[in-house]
Picture: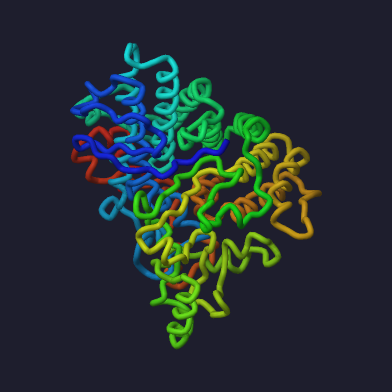
Length: 505
């Protein structure tokens, strides 16, 4: 059974936002004045959980627009903006400082999620108004949603404040930074508990909630960023063998947005936005804009007319594009290439390359600023590649081919399975495979960081002329970002364990 956040509607109660799938919540919660008098039924607990999903889904510093993508997609060898300016400039150029750090909203909203989950966990404990089944599901989901926030926080800022109790603002604002490793260990333990509480899947009227396998995937991701190869392998193989997810036969079908059936058996978790109700703007950053395209300005009116005739339009910002490096190195015979790199459209040569799997040209069904596209967070191909990597690191390539070649089967016609590699050459092949398979899906930068090759990769990447400065700007401390400077005014203890703020001062 697939899991999606389906058709989420925004409901505001007394200044607190809650949202959820139409079918998430059958009954309206009673008057909401504060969390202290809200948890009087399973439905009310579920509504509060929906508010946490809403924060992730709708806030532009998290999964809407390119909030979290800034930390995982920009500043790599695969993607940079198409001009000097716009979203992602400082991330791509490695010119972020404490003073121009744009991440305060991300920091605040991740901690909003953490505190909301702490409230939920506190309020359902020994609560006679919550049924046993309601308690299990609510606790499991809250543990997952909190762990996801700490996953992002530790990936972005390394050591961060850590608390799992319902603290007051005054108590939170004196917390120092906690070891990233200790936080990760605690969250892995929470996720393991959550997997015992959550079902394998949901009925149709409950699709969208994090289930056991969504939670297992986050656990696998924690093992991955820790380079814990054995646990990474074990959890990945468990997901492959025991969950209901299957690899799609056709790579392109994973990303088809229209007709409206966006779902397939490969997606483990996604946010599904709905035009006019719960739209997203992330697609704008990948869709070309006619002001810039095609390369020959004299062709723009002609292309615009052709697009209009088929209800399409270059109506986005076109800010996130492939680097010259990946354009020149992505195999020409790889069937994934046309979905990840294109330099022409309708026969017109484009000024910039684009990533078609992330754009949407449907100007009627998906106009600029009002997209209903899904946002894939995790899919099974990633898990196969994680299994291949871990197996190779533990035992060499002999047992790893079975995983990587399953991904390559749909990438080439005829098949081009890997064989005859030693551990080192397999490692390099795996890194390339992750680039080609998962391009633009918010994995690359964390891969480069955990492999310890971020700086050397950036220094040896071919960029478009506006971003060549990144080669000289990137430094070893850029593996993490500075904590927003405004947070030190609220909590001076954040500098106690690291006065350099991750090397930025």
